[in-house]
Image (cartoon, rainbow, N blue to C red; front, side, top):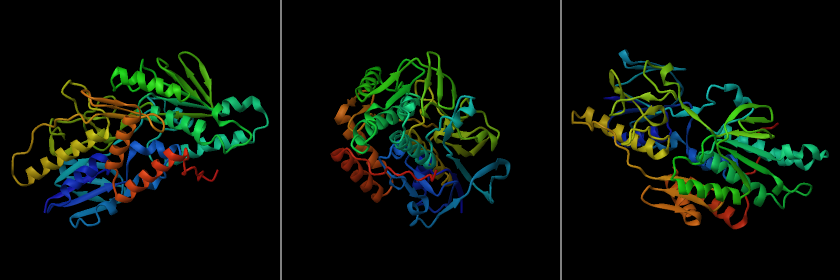
Length: 412
């Protein structure tokens, strides 16, 4: 029986596995976490809109009825392609086909010391830690007697004007200016200052210019100060130095950049400056046609010659494609030679009832954009319970201006 190993159960790996799970192949999924995380909604965990269990589902639960599928909790540390073998922290495994879908991790552009002062948002631990940090600011402000430090305490700086930065800024603004207003007696939470820094000329740079401008104006209506053409030069404890000024803030959150997982440390491959592997047209790697690298870890160009963005639709389509290539190879049929990405649109939400949707030929914004954004995200969640819980939470939040996941759980 042909052995297929998929490393990583994000969008790309999970989609590949789902397409191969009903076959007669020997399928093994390896991930360092025991759950699949719906990352597009991670910011809502960080801003107390959802609980972690609402956007994650155990991998074993997803494949519980698939008899040819084995799930392993482990971490990849090396690949021996000449032997068709991978090495994990706890074992070694042989394969006939290998799919690497290990995603990406935060990039501080060579200034790794900044992570000590500006946490990023990439996993559940990050989200719950940031949630505690945000909520503690208001708790500390409530008991501050010296008002001189209150401005710094109630200031939030988000670095990076991509979807994560925009969504986080809107969510923190909603939390401070609408949700918490009646719950504190000493402070006025509406005085919280949210600043979004973007090095480029526009936020949401991959969206159309008109939608980018709309998003900026919408954030400003929510009370967010958007500063474009503002490059960060240094971050230290409670300080952000930019090309224009130095900002004092208690909470600094990094939303600016990502790099691919360290595939190059596992196997000798060519990568771009972000660590993404330069793959062949069929998403395999040079010299080894039975090894595929997909999702955020791979460098794939679109029809205009630009690299595809690290988005869920890209990862899912690559997963479908590689599953088809593997099936055809095993059955000695002619596999598809080149991956083509079909643009499924660009979505970002701004606050509780506003969003942008950009399909290129068709755009939506405002409340109708938010409704569309909500439907799409609920549809792509894994598991009926998750869909139901997210829908109920969103409906409750929309009707009552309340967020029920405001728990400080780090014990500090």
